[in-house]
Image (cartoon, rainbow, N blue to C red; front, side, top):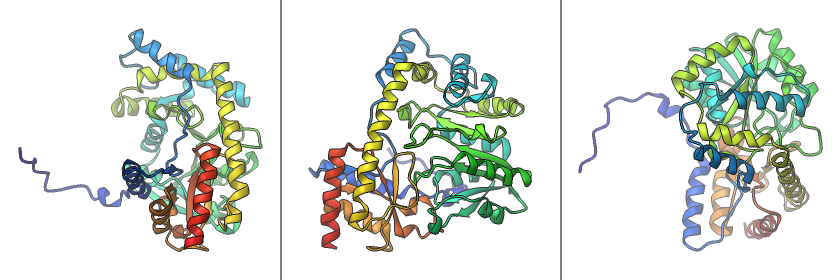
Length: 394
């Protein structure tokens, strides 16, 4: 059978959507593992914990009970209510169930929000370094990604002065993440309030990605809604709740925006995954939350180990990685091409990391790599020993 002939035309956005550079390394890591190499995976941003059994059991019950049909486009009422109650109990913030929009993953929430707010030529300020897919979502709605270039000198933290300087006449939205990817930095309530003020003064909107919100170490967890109630907040069941493959997220928005999001969700997605929604109801049960806190404590131990040991190898950690499960390392003492460096580390030592090129283009990404501490402490010890040997050979 011959291949079908592709159309003679294609959208030029295909040329602007960059691949994840780490995926080439992931594929090579899989090849090396298949050939017998012991590979330690510290590259992909996915926790190594399985979905909590309480959530899995709830999903199985949903299937057994025939919960396989479409739900309302914005999610089942019980889950919207549970999420709103979570904000009240965990953060002391009043969120109405009708403000909660359940989506197919955090990415689905971002797509809906951008489609509702951003039109052709509208600018969206995005941090560099930052999560790379965000600028591609802006492209998808014909908006203009605008780089908010962060500085190594202050640990890649966002300041009101930087936002004010980067704001342009067509800028409509500032998008932040806390904790962020790749540095793990956490914005304080005071910082969020100040940034919200800068945006409000310019008539813009603030969108805060809180998908790593539950994974904070050494400080109370907070939400931007506590200091910026008009902010748009997106979250996900993937990271803290351990449900990456279930593809379920949510957004909290002003009620006036909900009718627009409802229409868009009906057309884009029909509804979030039914089984996942019923499974997620178990995410807020006390025994599930207790298990999630045990996992957070384990991540904190891993973080402490790496923060102690990596600088001694000549790999300083940038900024204040108080959240998520990432450290951003300065490898400029060894290379100006972190993609090549990560490739050599994988080939020679069997340790997979993510090159800085995946997180932006204007902050000297060749000087940085991201480590995801998604392996247990024993494996991290092995990885540290291999990295030390690798550096000694270079």
